[in-house]
Length: 140
Image (cartoon, rainbow, N blue to C red; front, side, top):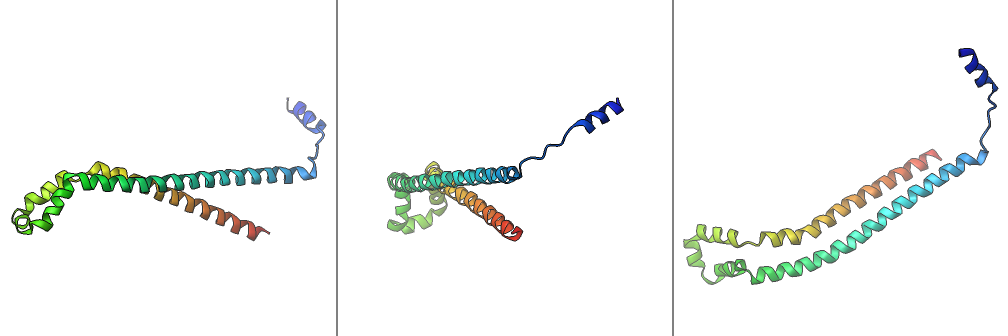
């Protein structure tokens, strides 16, 4: 069996690939990578726009919720009746904490958090691109 495989191996004629094939494959790979990166950048930009619009809208809604909640009424009590608030400050702080609109704060800060995550992804993508550019410049 070993002789048979040697005969088969020796009888195979090596075919050289065309000279431009390697360059064509590498250029296609480079174009595909560039297309993927440009697609990622497009989605990041769309995310920036959407999270920016949602952040502005969330701030407006949060302002309305704060102004119409009991939290703002209790908070304004500190300006109108400071002596009473200082006398019962512990109960006052507990009442402020109980009436604080936590869900509204979370809903308001969510678009900002998404915006920060997108900035992180964009910075990572840009730093990867700069590193690749530097590597390519050293090779040439």
